[in-house]
View 1 (spheres, rainbow over the protein chains, first blue to last red):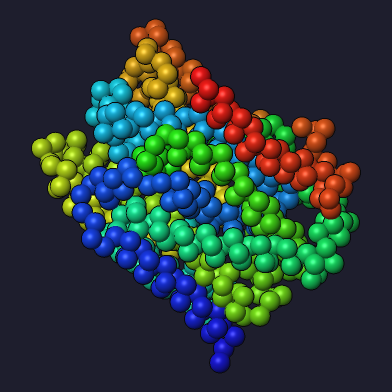
View 2 (cartoon, rainbow over the protein chains, first blue to last red):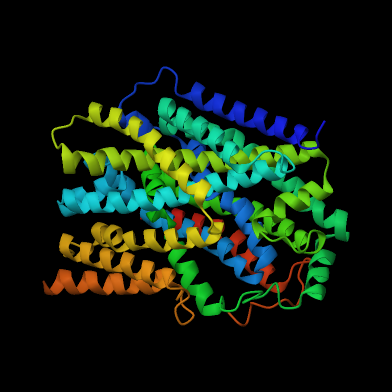
Length: 469
Length: 42
């Protein structure tokens, strides 16, 4: 028997069980748009917590976080800081968005722009940009999933068949069960992931170094300066850290996170959710421990994203690799499901309907959205199979992009005077600047993250066009 | 930031910057609970 047989069997079992839960949760539910997209606005604290934790804790948190501490060091702390700060931002803004959504029957982020600024074209623009960013994020989840299966099978199974099988499963349970199905799969995913992370995060330092303190001492001794900023990087220093944390703490501007606010039963559900969510950052710290252990246990990996899987593979019996891999696979599939669902809804409801066929009924939109599930999944799959960029580079570009929705949302809620023209001008300039700075390798720009620079320009243009125009 | 982004002193086995950040993260729910309570009282 090949060494990869046990872990792959366990991963397949966990993924099968998770998908089964997804199908089960959607049975006997009406197939209308309101149920599919926002679960009839009826989820309580536990399911909302699991759903938003599912969005927060992606495969990037597992492989990318351990990979960053492994290959870059100190700058990795930004991920813990922004994840926490994002909850503070959400505490104040998400209940207001929820109230607005219920009052006006809003289901998606572009719906908000259409309703607030009275412009379906602005909504279509927001939808187009949102679908683009979501596909980037989605292909990142699929790439991560491919890495997991490849490493857990001891390179016997390639990335492509693994990504294909998982993407088909995700598309199928999104298709039948909608957002409620995703929330229920998160129950299994969170339980397994937190258990796996606690076991490996606490035991690895003891097995290899005799404790957490001795491990950090060994890393500091072998690589002085690695655990502070800029670590092993040339230019990720303190001004980069502050600007990146501020920008990425606006992560609720992701269309799928914005949209999941509408699944809550009440604004208070969202407030409590934000209060307890920082506890979820503790598992992230444990993943950093795993990455630190990998620095000395499995040095010289060509791809830092492999650090967590390789140190687990080196240290533990195959069945633990299987459980970690299975939890990791679900950690890719849950966010992927939410992203597919959101992108297809944006495509059908906010892009196709206003542009091509304004007379469509909600029922027809729901049907079109289900077809779009297949299309979006296929596009992301093709991108993931042909992608050569590393996980984090893409995420940073997409994060810098979604941050540009912020002025339109926050000024839309709290200012009477901003106009559709102002919001459009600011957003278009913000997107262009992000693409220019990142594609021409000018990020960070004079030490400041590109997305933050773009956001400042974005705000200035919104104010200039709205108030002077 | 230069004040807290350093490896020493080691607190609870963690480099100082790790400890500092973790301490703030654990304080956040308490501060937000307080904010929640104050907002409810209004």
